[in-house]
Image 1 (cartoon, rainbow, N blue to C red):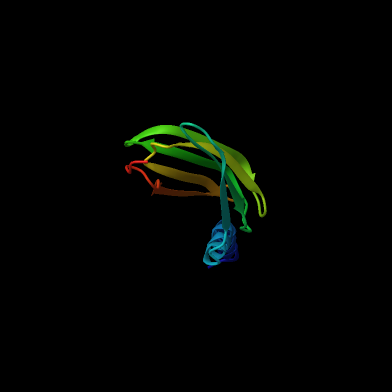
Image 2 (image 1 turned 135 degrees about the vertical axis):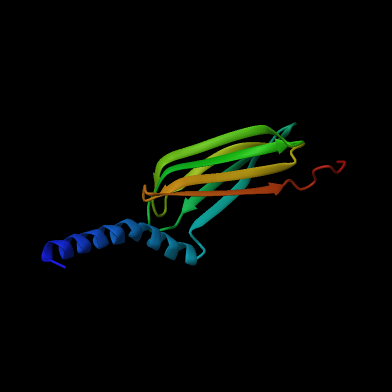
Length: 138
């Protein structure tokens, strides 16, 4: 292999390493299992349901960009409430706040989180949970 071919191979390898570095660092953050703190509290009880505040605090080392947090409340299998919060970027210690309403007749709540790891890799997480007391007479 001549010197220009070797130089091209080394440059290509360097580019691959640079492109993978944020992903590898993020994977290391995930292995610590404490990359996000989620805190919620009831803000207000109304006649039709409860207003809830949720705060997501990011504790990772790699910046997240194009961050979107969506909370959907389902009543009888259909979306009855939906709320979104977004930000251009989240870095260590920054938080994203959202307020949403949970009607008393809600059957479940779905939380969807989507962002890009260092602007390169798409990250999406979705969780859904039943609402305690659904279907039981009050």
